[in-house]
Length: 129
Image 1 (cartoon, rainbow, N blue to C red):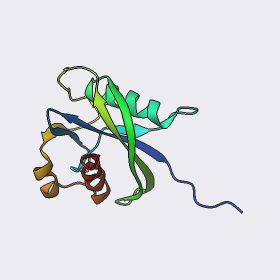
Image 2 (cartoon, one colour):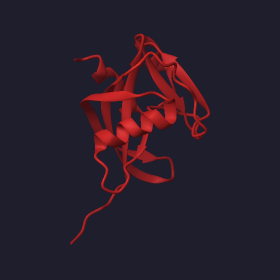
Image 3 (tube, rainbow, N blue to C red):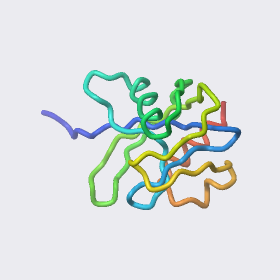
Image 4 (cartoon, one colour):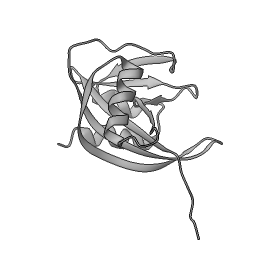
């Protein structure tokens, strides 16, 4: 007997000069950079690849932060896995065609943003080294 199968999305918490890099999606929610695993791809590799694609940054994965099941408004559920990441250079992040906006936010600004609670929990976990 098989159970439910969920897509997996790997996300990275990236801090640049003490501010978190977030992207606005088509649902007008702020989210972490990241995306789906490719066949045979390690989660950490997917995280680094997605940060490069979505922010134009080279990054390294430092540690896993959290995982949670996200019920996307009317589109099903996705397993989200978040990692703490560090940029490898001083390159300024850039917005890709995949998102509507890019923002750098201080920790105190996160609570007021329209974003899923799981992302907020991951951002909080980043600061609890």
